[in-house]
Amino acid sequence: MKKRLVTLGAAGLAAAALGVAYASTVGSDRPTRLLDPDAELVYVAGPDGEALTCNGKLVKVKRSALGGTTPPLTPEQAAGKSARPQPGVKVIRCEKGPNGRETGRVVFVPAEGDDAR
Amino acid sequence: MRPMLRHVASVLAIAFASLAGFAGGAAAHSLVSAGNVYDNGNQCVYNYTLQDHTYNSVIVRSLTNTPPYQFPLSNCTYRNSKPDGYLAGRWESWKWGSNVGAWVLCGTQGWNYGGGYELHVGRSTTGCGGGYYLVAGGAYVYNGGWVGGWLATGYEWLW
Image 1: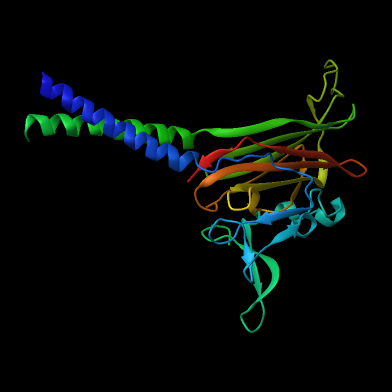
Image 2: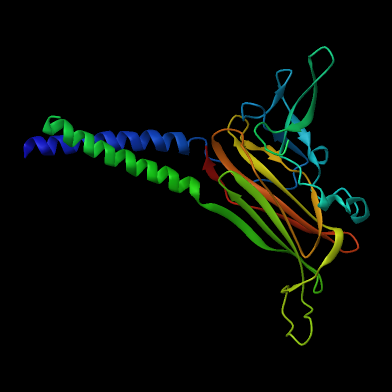
């Protein structure tokens, strides 16, 4: 009986430790502010999923350069686009010049693993 | 197996199963933000923005108060079909950037256009690694100019 209680206690402690480990992974760095839909400059994610750096500097990009917050085309310009397949997901990366060095600007590229590329 | 080891193994298995169930449950549900983002009494724009684990989407609906035939007047209830190019939608996936203390744009399909009374823009996405994510969706209808607005889902941890 005593052995069984000790065993259950040990297992309970192990489960608690696992729970704490899981919670610390999931719950770390919880967002502290709401998304500002009107922000003119925003951070974009890099290949590591963190805020993008180009030439070692954090990059902020104008919302207008990312497509803006209102549709940029008129209905006449947009007509016919609905018949085409929807585009794939795009992500933002550092633009590289002819010498392979980062220019400091950013470009949209197809997301890795997206099946619409 | 000795009885004591068997006990430990079985209790640990239950603990792991509980954790796995908890983690799976956390990732399996959808976050939705929906409602009319524009209403001038005649033209309404309905926005349905969804984050469903690895699938992001926005649905745009063009609605009106004006009923067909003899139906009763009802606010933003009836379909208000538009020509091709008059509906536009865009979703953006945002990840919390812990290194900058701000939301970071992870990916988007850009603006998509359509006609009729409903436009669905959505796609599976691989995301930007583990973190807190939300989806912001813009829903617009052309009515002498683009009218509509944005909604954002709540955030949740995604792997």
